[in-house]
Image 1 (cartoon, helix red, strand yellow):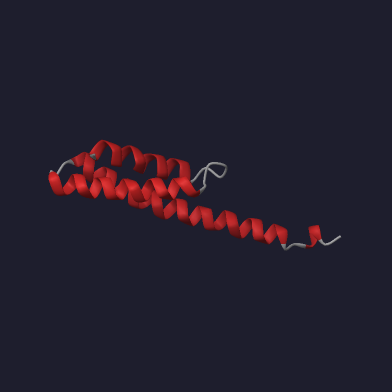
Image 2 (spheres, rainbow, N blue to C red):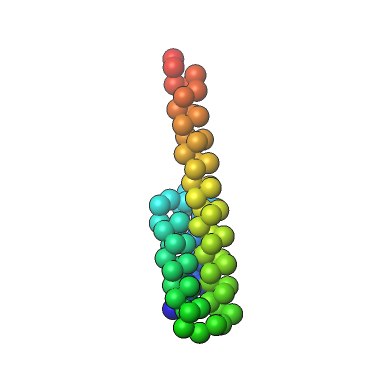
Length: 85
């Protein structure tokens, strides 16, 4: 479980900051990574579980922030005078 949490944390961190890939699954991967890493830390304290937890938390936060920034940018473009011809 620790390795799965680490992999999901890496995916959410790396995929969350890429504009085309940043979608719903990236912060969902981070949340699942947090859960898996927390369960793995309860069973056995290991560096992989700790790294997975940290990366999952950072990846979830960053991917959610970048997702909101992309939504705000799209809303700004849609509301600009470019489309009011």
